[in-house]
Image 1 (cartoon, rainbow, N blue to C red):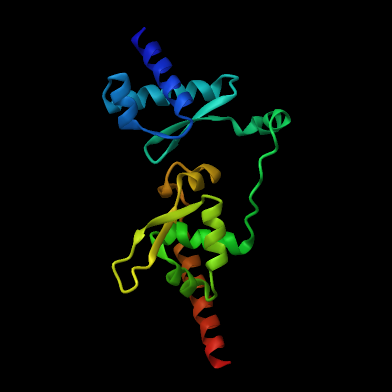
Image 2 (spheres, rainbow, N blue to C red; image 1 turned 135 degrees about the vertical axis):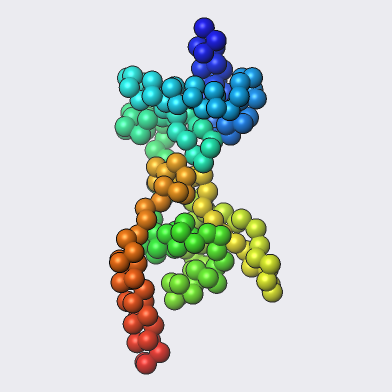
Length: 189
């Protein structure tokens, strides 16, 4: 009976908050230790995924959020206004990839990797809430450091940044050689 109460409390917390809630805050609210709370939440996640439910719980770097199942999106938009879909162009995806893998990173470092100005791309990614300012670099001019947000994790179905795909070392070396050759060609011109 105590587990059912804890599940109901967790469900109420996640529903009411509407955003991700850290495990330690949930544990404190339901008066259980973090490990027990984690087990209860994962049990709930399994139940929601196996039952014909319209909701599920996602994990975002040690926080949890109650969400609508993506498979029901078409049903939801019939009753709500169609949400604005953000279009991620190749430039935005390239910039976002650099930030995701190299964060925290400055705009100058991004531009150094891309070889072109990234003002527009960085501003759009901030507007889409996929990246945010993470502080400032302790260097002359104190440039802004950028990193990804929870919205980035949600949009790409990742639990944490550790879930990002890892490049095959051989492919990585191949990309590095291509970039060096391209840079040399630009110098020769």
